[in-house]
Length: 105
Image (tube, rainbow, N blue to C red; front, side, top):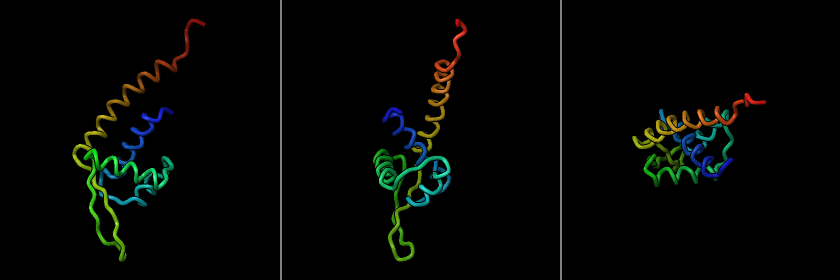
């Protein structure tokens, strides 16, 4: 799969994992596990990129005596998910065209 396409898909997957409620790294990986495998290093790279793009916010809070980062989606993050859905409709249309059987054989 094209690296840029995969990167965009993973970004939207992470945003979708936190769209309903804030979350933290381990829980995001756990919530996504039924759908895709992601390493912690990959996740934290994506989270930093999404924070820089202002698609999510980060807060730090103490949990069981340790500091934990919690991630929350922004309005721009929600818009990115909606834009992805529109883009995906176009991708699926292209896929149908590319994968159709030739009627000339």
